[in-house]
Image (cartoon, rainbow, N blue to C red):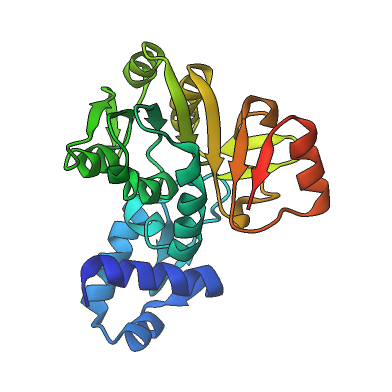
Length: 251
């Protein structure tokens, strides 16, 4: 079993049980205690769990930005569905802001179908992925590398984004409710704010699990979002609230 796969398995177990003994994890994953301990150390360093003698407990995820290796494997079917819908918003020759989210990364796999795109991003994985396409010019923000999310954040990143004006910004979020859209990391949110401010249109990509969840930092209101693309219909209260702000909802 590969290390990253093992860590995802541990997180899946803890997301259901909240707390698990090392011996229980060993039996479930068919690993030695030493192997499980190494994975638990790495997950604790990422801020996802808290170790105790003989086991580990899940840290509530309300204000945590999960590492990229964990996010990219979660709800991939929903992300693919959302990116298929987002495809219709893009045209040849467009200029795009792309944030560093795993949902936006799924959209990137489809961008080789267009001609003469220009992308500005703060996502290391996204920049690397798009650099393989001859039809796309890629600009990446400078700043502090946040290793867990493969993002470039901070003042330099925000200033870099602010120097561009683009046709479309594609962003994701950690949560939303009738009052607006939220992020777990204020520095990540600051970069996204500059994307919103400097794009002619902003498209929010987010699956149903983000609905009706608040987080630490309010990113923006829905009146700053032109379209919200998701994988299933929001409940009536949230849907009405979003549409009353002039934001199109696509699902």
